[in-house]
Image 1: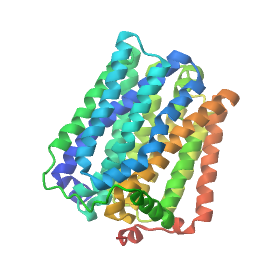
Image 2 (image 1 turned 90 degrees about the horizontal axis):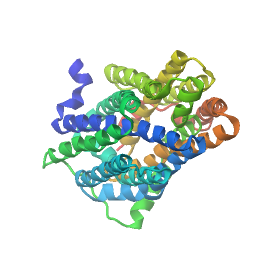
Image 3 (image 1 turned 180 degrees about the vertical axis):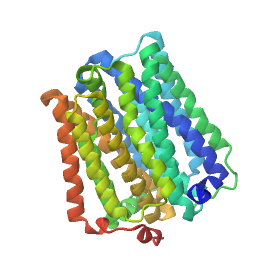
Image 4 (image 1 turned 45 degrees about the vertical axis):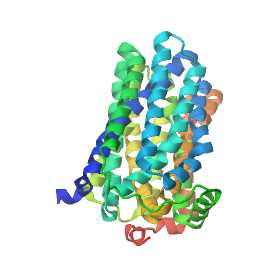
Length: 409
């Protein structure tokens, strides 16, 4: 029975890829804490921190579709070798300039933008590569396991990052993050030479049009992307955690690392539970319900002045978000033809990353005008409204089941 629950691990290439991603995710999450804390130390401004989201998302919105076209046209492994190297260089630059004392808000924004640009090409290649590493029947399990290692990485990364920052500053974090990309590169270089490549599409404007046309015609995929966008746009609270840690809870950088880790702790528990019990059958109902719980937990976090309660509500939000993410990824991969996987991953990336990053800007502006507590609480309530509106206007999503998704080509 256990083998069935972990059957995707039978693929050697998938196992190695998963391990490499796990190490890289830890480094990336450590770096996100370091960047947020460094910007807070440099400016002390919620608006300046909100601009981090804008710097990160702008390249994604501009280039993600192009990244998806390239992922459907070229060898996805080779594409990732280039993008992973570029991501490493971004952290090398931050480490070097921090060490030499030449770091500034402009430097941090530039490094974040470079990472966003590399991610615009990396995410479509990475997301569509997973489907080639396992048989189609094992894909839901592979995506679930991928969610487990992502959530575990986002537990370990922020906690370790916060501890390192509190003791030695941000420099060791940037160094580790730069080195962590090597784990993915090693996994990519060690993959089987006979890995399926799938159907390739030409690099031309019509490829973009085909992707947009498919998304527009598939109401289920589009509705899940829109739901994710609005939920994370309204309820994204990570940007404001340094302010909450410093001014509301008075727990410092060590406490900040724990706050960053709280949501992933809840998400890890949920990810392990989902992987252990098997694929979720009632996809639509569970998806809507998980987004409602996510918004309610964020609203409760915004009203909390207790550190333990804040951790609890963040953990609940992480668990709900994990369930939502696993369902959305499973639906998208099963409902998308192989030839369009890269483009669908890139379009999803625009929603998946665009929502929280633009939400960081929105949160920073609202917090600067009306206060941090109001920004977080109101965002959680608006997230609930987005979920209920989706359930009302897209009944086909509400009734979607796994068996329906598995029948797709």
